[in-house]
Length: 358
Ligand code: NAD
Image 1 (tube, rainbow, N blue to C red):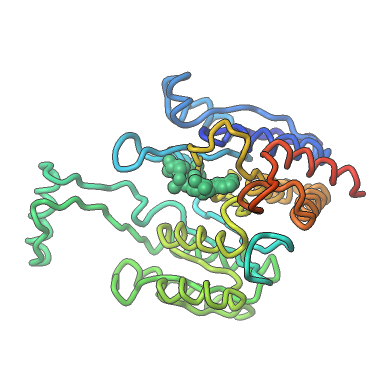
Image 2 (image 1 turned 90 degrees about the vertical axis):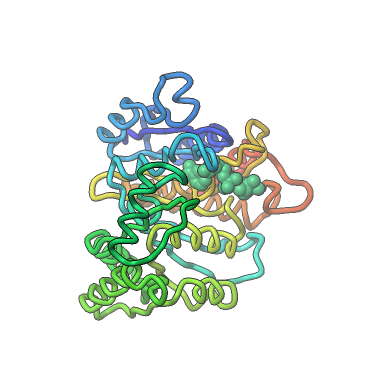
């Protein structure tokens, strides 16, 4: 049966890695009908909307999408289209597997960590108060009245929102994932020693949920210590579950453990809809140069095939990518210092390997 999939090329290096990914997914023979849709600055230029209604409609209809990265201006300008997409479609879980493929540029071995990141709240809730604004003065007054604490007049404030319901949902997701994938341990990352109410709520909820899963070990780590232990002895970790911001930071850290952002796939999952995308961003300085590694998006494609039930095609594609990594001939600049190839050549090499896998 053919699958209707929404493809959002994104911007920066997005269109190049999306094309490479589309080519290898087509070569698996999984039978995908692509529906192109747009998001980000390019979409605003061409269609007048950052996150066009047509894009949301296409994803809601097809239920599965794969997207290239989208640029978000730093410090000012429009808010993140990625965050808007996740909130709009209630893609509450971000799943980021970090696994070492032999031949990948890393000094570690045997790392196979699943990072589960809460995707809808925390400091990403987008509730912010700009320095000097009337609403910020109101907030400062409220804080002074309610707590006796003083927020200085030149402050900007971003709210860290952690709810019991979202914490419960993401921790349950992590345990269900662990159970379904024969994982042994879930580790919750937090800073509940300092943020006793917000991170405290996340941790207490995680402890409660853990009691429902006696077959899976549970532990927690203060997030700074978790980062230190991840770079010292990553093999001790299995599934990590974290609130949004720590999850963002820790998943890039884990990508670094397994060879860099070019090898780190991801999925944003809700109860009905799934949007697959690489962990990395749009790397604008490499735009249009046919240089960056398409493997993180290709491996996101492997996750997508599994989600579609195309397990054979997924295994074949993962094997083909692993063979290209192990051979080390047709890999991009981030994987070897000299003699690297470009994005499209990696796709050619993966397709060639696919032809040789039964
Ligand atoms: P980035 O991930 O785009 O790039 C950081 C660096 O990592 C690059 O300069 C490059 O050296 C390396 N890198 C990234 N992807 C690579 C690849 N596939 N192959 C080889 N090297 C790679 O991070 P950034 O520069 O902080 O962000 C750029 C933009 O992307 C920002 O606007 C940010 O908001 C956005 N972003 C989007 C997403 C998304 O769409 N899901 C995710 C993260 C960041």
